[in-house]
Length: 113
Image 1: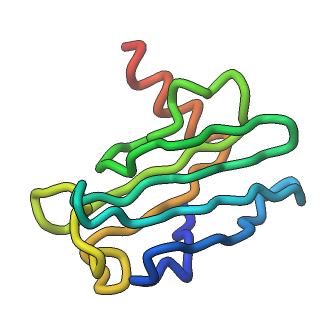
Image 2: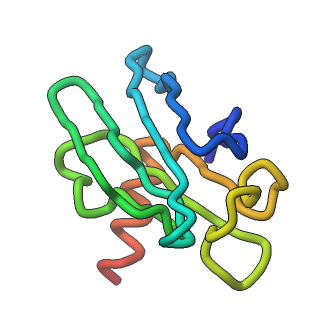
């Protein structure tokens, strides 16, 4: 797992994340105070796009798209709660991780057992 760096407390953020094979994906995230939550506004990889996905603690938030993209995204938090505060990523309470194709496959295999 590789940490997706530069997630700050800014309410709207966009970054390009490199993958091991040399390709990239773009991710835009935003914080909604009235919903107490962070959302993926848009994630684009080649011709694949997902929009409006709430960021939750999960070993792979993108598991449902495993046959469409060769990576996953995990969110893990130190406290026993979802990332609901604007400072959660900047403070280190919550962290986003990029999962490689193998890590995504390993998680799929684990769920199949």
